[in-house]
Picture: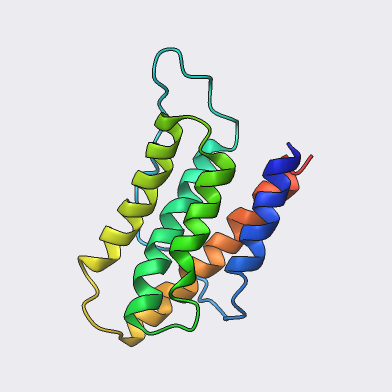
Length: 142
């Protein structure tokens, strides 16, 4: 579980953007259930949280680019690092990639220009991502 701890800590640092986030929740979404293919090893116990984190990263990739955030270009690289660390099978890589893309599409469908709402959503997502990263590091950090 050392890899999970390192990954979670790296993501926590990446998501700690120093923004004060509102205490409201992000739009409700049904988190994907990690389904495995026959012959695929069972997913780790932190798979649902990791998929949520990938989805948040996709959302932030869109919103930070929309609002010209200073780290806007970093989100794709962060997702690549996540895939390198956790995408042990093609099916798992696909689940993580799909979660990232789902997050990206969710906000691209409703946010066409940078508004106060876009910036608030971005701050809330960063806060939620940081919370998930801390949870992963605390619970599965080895």
